[in-house]
Image 1 (cartoon, rainbow, N blue to C red):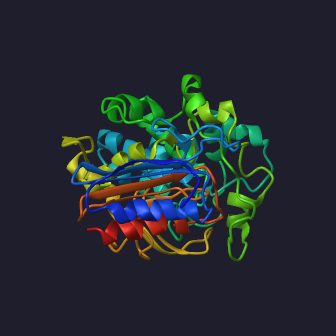
Image 2: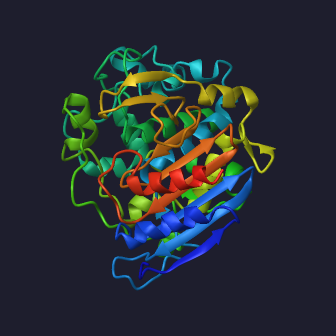
Image 3: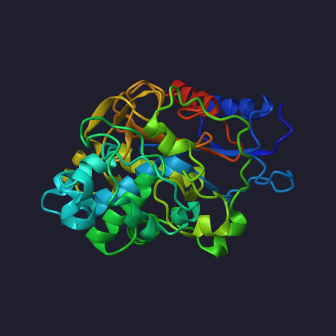
Length: 374
């Protein structure tokens, strides 16, 4: 057994999930972590273990929150879907209709669907920028708008690791007048008292777990210009982890919350746009949100990926057995899914990062145990 403190709730019949959670600690794969799952809207697993700090002085508590990095993207996609009905053409609206500056360099025909499914050709800045630009979302979006795409938009797709959030943040602001984080707080998470935020105020910073960074870089496969722009330049990302990084809104990367909160929000994918039996996304918008927009070799990641309107589809079975599951992973290992056939959602969060780009082995161990109990 592990020397790490482990606590939480496991419904009858789901004891193997707790066993798998404990095994991750016993095998010295964790510092601190949480795993939660909902089935038919009922909480069936809510586990936490280990420590919230690198010094191992503070146990991971029920209210410990942690950055989930790109696992944030499908939550931001839910926000966009919740306001998209304001546009008569929905996801088929040209981005430039809302954001005229975006039409520069051959991007006039790029639709919202293209943008959110990583087809816009803007995975990063090719030319040097001050990395501090990432900490000013409005300025960063303005700097992205005139860029020339790295491929003809709509002809291929490549993961927009960080830029995705600034582009979508600007779209939501222009559609609704509010920011992604504000819509999430006021319309979705806040009314349901779900402990997840995009843009975390200073009053909550004491609850944020310390991150232990990975010791090795991820395997990005063959490096090309798109991969380099997204991941490998000196200016491809801001300093992650400071107070400013927590407080601003980066809808692609800095959502912060508990495993339970992430699992419940991904439950919207498992319940056709409903949260606790309340529809938060219209039926038409939800159908458009989960429709596959692109599938094939990713130009940035070394995988075949399949994207709907901001959320991945489980095309290679890393997120359970259902190919219709909606899912995503985050830098260092976080993972969440919503299975619409089982009405099942689950989330894994942690603060000891690995170099896995997708479906961290610790998370897949838990997901396999979870499905094995059904």
